[in-house]
Structure formats: structure tokens, C-alpha cells
Length: 448
Ligand code: DOR
Image 1: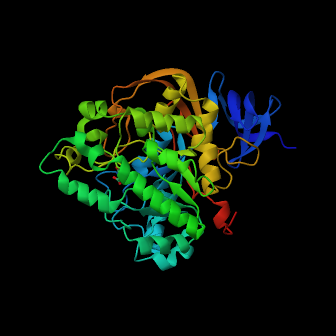
Image 2: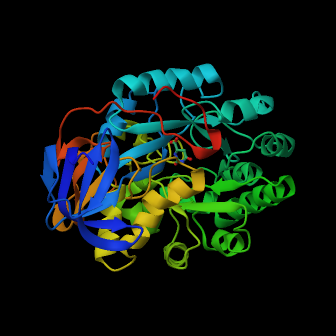
Image 3: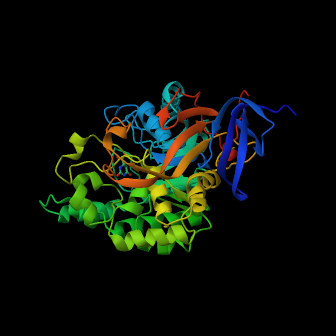
């Protein structure tokens, strides 16, 4: 056997399917070709990883990179640059751009931008709506499509499916796991009218209350069970939803976000004002505790950042005219490593949530696992490194993070995308030839 690698990672502590092991990794043509004691191997490039932990590349399955149309908030280039600086090696991007991503042409426009500017691998969601409901099966199978995303409650942008008949049709016209933002639109409208002239952002979780989330979650899960369709519930935020979802795991997978696990009302609104405003909202400690319980009992499948940048000027509008959303792709791994350091979850569980979980839930081909034959995507971290997260570190066009000034323990040091060292010693290197993420359930022949 030819024992020459393009890239050799020496002496890291690997998080493999067999558990933790100190070993070397050889990569050739973007894939892992050997794991173990590889002292006999030679290579064009090597990294000495003594003292560092090697995780399968983190896959962020929920980001809003705003391009095309909203480039003053974010671009695919800046968003993905933040991703790799934060140790993320692949992303799924959301369809509430301008124009909305509703057709094959809309998807292709994003794929063209990403092919020329992304720092890591990518897939794009297509929005499910009344206008394209009959084309779901074809759209979800397109190369580069992450599947279909539905907004049941209005958030940012015009994408909304608040009609039960349309929702039923979307559920019956596709096969891949349908991703859902579950908040009940009728209840949101009714409760907003009751708010009156109060501009306190503290009302955000009262307006979009636990019941708004629960009603929509219950409705879509019951409809999905009637249709026999698998669902992925995005950013689950409440105790009641977790209790309900525990009885529906046959068809339903669950995402939580780092901000729902880290921030809590009322303190976050006191400290951050509208910077803490997200949909669904950050709620009080009781809900955060329920989300952590669902992390620890295995109910949660995936952590996604819901990176949703708006400019600071936009965020300064008085609530509720301030847009909901905060950055998160670059801080996902540092914040979660800090939770690992604090003993809230194990590193193995984190890998399950950020690499193996997305691969399993969405049927991602060749990613999410440190194993021979898989893509050479690595998030290489120092579990002891202490850093302070600061706004100037944030690559997003919006230029801010709710964690500005927060000290964390655990930090991404090197990021490797299919054998290409994109970040080395926390420094951005050159852009890799980023590619579409491939899916086992929408297999399409490609030139190799
Ligand atoms: O807070 C949010 N902002 N939640 C969403 O679901 C959408 C997002 C955005 O696009 O700004």
C-alpha cells in the first residue's frame, strides 16, 4: 500500500466511533485513508496535534446567510468564513432570502455564489409554500438541496405557511425529512394585538409564548403522523414541547440552539436588550433546564446555531419593530465547548449533536464520523484554551455577537475541510474548493 498522504494529523486525541483514542490520521484526496499509528507514513503536509482533540467536522444545519438580497446583513462568503473560524466545516442555509428560495433557479443562484465564495461545504433549504407545493418532490431531490423548510409562524421575511391545507399538501408531497419552524401564527397575531403600546423587549417571550410553540408543534407532528412523513423540529425552545416530543420520536427529530441553552430571561433581556431577541424566544430558566434535560436524556438529535444576523442599527429599533435574530455560527462550538468544560455535557455527546447527529438525521453522505472512507473534515480543538469572545473576532457582516466579552474555556484551533487546512493556529489560510453536501437519500450521479 502506498503510505503517502496529502495531509497527516499526528498525535491528536480522536473522537471516533470506538471512543477516544490517541492516534494519527492520514488523508488523501479529501478523504480519511488511515487511522492509527502511522509513524511509517510520509506526507506533503502535517499537523502536530499533541494535546488537542480532533472532532469530526461540525455541521451547522441551520444558518441564515442572507444572500442574495440582504448582503448588508450577511453574505455566504462572510458567513462561511465565520463558520470555519469557529470550527464549522459544513452548513445548511435557510430560504428566507430576497428572493425567497422557492425554485430550482433560486437554488442554483445560491449554489453559484457558494461555489465561488464559500469557505466550507454547503447545502441550501428550499422554502415550502402554497406556490411551489406541488413541486416538492422534484425540488427536494435537487443536488445541493438540504430539503424543504416551512415557517408555520411568521418570523423574518415573507415565507409563511399558516394554512392547514397547504401544510398537509407539503407533508404529503415529499419524502425527505421536513424542517419546521413551529409557532402558531393565529395565536401570534392575536397576542400581538393585546400588547398595546408597550415597547419592552421583556415582553418578547410573553408575546410568542410557550403555548404558541406547543400548539404549532402538536399540530404539525399530528399531521406528519397522518401523512407518514418525517419531521425535523428546528430550535425547540420550551419545556412543554420537549414533554410532548418525547412521545413522538419515531418520526420527529429535534434541534436546540446554543442560545436557548446559554441565555435565559429575564437576565438576557436586561443585559442585551433586543440583541437577545430571537424567534422562538429565549425563555426563562425553567425552559432552559428542560432543554438541558433533553440534551442529557438523548431526546435532542442536533444542535444548530440558527445564525440569523441583523445589523446593530436594525436591532436598535424599538421592540417589537426590531428584527429577531442573532449571530451564532462562529460561536456554536466555543460556547458548547465551554458547556463541556463546565460539565453540562460530555465531549462525546457534543460530537453526537454536532457531527454524527446531523449526518444521521439528514442522511448526509460521508460526513460526521472519524472513520476511513469519510470526508477529511476536522474541527480540532484545545479543551483547555481560555479565550474571551469579542465582536471584532466575528466575521459576520453584522459584526456582533451576544457573547461579546464572555470568557470561555475550549476553543477551535485548526479547521480542515476535506483535507484542506482552512484555519491553522486560529488563523485563516486559503479557501478550499468547497462543494455541495451529498445526501444518501437523494443520490445523484456526479462526475468523480
Ligand atoms: O429569530 C429568528 N430570526 N428566527 C427565525 O426563525 C428567522 C430568523 C431570521 O431569519 O432572522
